[in-house]
Length: 218
Ligand code: SAH
Image (cartoon, rainbow, N blue to C red; front, side):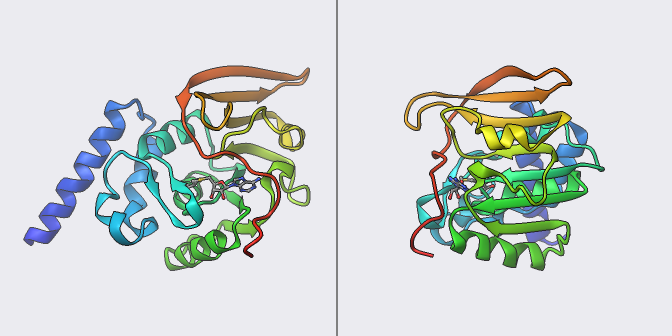
């Protein structure tokens, strides 16, 4: 091995170790996170910090989530290889790229056209052909593609948006951070049963807010 390969292997090992020590233990999730290089989703000044377990700024004033939170949310979603998943909040595209290794099909939407455009370029370069990215207000879901086996929201809502609950299959799972933008938010897991919805509070988290409408600079 060259020194560079050595350093890369070492960095990867530390990255996976940090994930495990923060509770990401699902082997399929860990394998997916090993495959997807977070460095590709972070630009400029912050790229050298891509392997730290920290959220980082991306374009449009948004953030790429902390890897351990991406891992814990992916794990909480209990994705199976047959699943059709909706992600609200494409951001950098990192979470969608992880999901593409776990699910059959991933739809991801963001209200910023620029983020969607940049994420698509990365998905293409990685040959992640089962991801479709759209610019839209994700609080309304994607009625044309619904219903979904799994829904993941990566921006904080005051309540789980009604249209998203409506687009979840019976037996489906949705993971969503709920709370006021600057206060403490809770990660909630919602399971749709024959008779309704079961809610489970998982852990405190901090996300950028879910904002109404498509961003105007588009
Ligand atoms: N999952 C991303 C991080 C998301 S940050 C990643 O892996 O990098 C949250 C994202 O939600 C932001 O990009 C923001 O533009 C988007 N967002 C906020 N409100 C939205 C809405 N109503 N519809 C779609 N996207 C929204």
